[in-house]
Length: 283
Image (cartoon, rainbow, N blue to C red):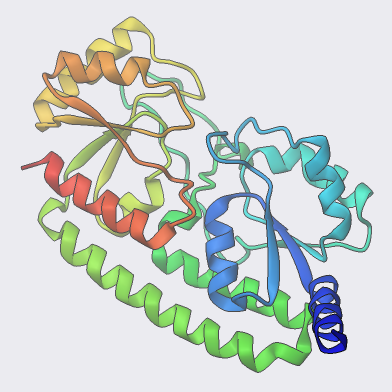
């Protein structure tokens, strides 16, 4: 009985001793766990099915922040209004921007008659986690922060970090091979999440949504005409958004809609599946 008691006590103590971090979106949890394994407990702020553009944290999530040692931001829109509130709740919590060192691109807009926009911060594309090469930069930022938090496990984190970099290079090679035949091709998405992915693999995304708004009837007609001209048979939609306009366009081109999730926590498998879906959409 004593042995069981002391074993339980050790397990409970280790649980309370475990470091805790919070991230904005599920893919970040994947990246942190690749480096930290089970040594770090990871909270996710934006819950499945919700958009990081409009998310409002729940009261219970705000309470969980009190136990967080680090908040890993990534530049998604909801952070702009909430990070200062997170600081107020936990003044000892480090806030680490995992996008440091990455040059962001402008978020995609329609090409047909839209007004021009200045190069403001709000027009920059936050979806940097969908390019495996850019994830290498994010991984370095995560590794550096974890070492500051838990220097005793530096070697453990470093070894996992180096393995993760190899996995990212291997994934990039696989995606490059899968998408080689599509270089220069356009694909149509409802929300313009895939700009970095498209740029890396020499593709071009055409967004249905315009500045967070559903397209007007005239814009839908233009998108249908463009899709027919480009030989597009599929409109890709994310589960966080309405697919009403996407289905109208898909019907107009005699095609279909396919769900692809930019926020999937099963990050590597998701990117491979997306590449396969893109290839199939042109076959």
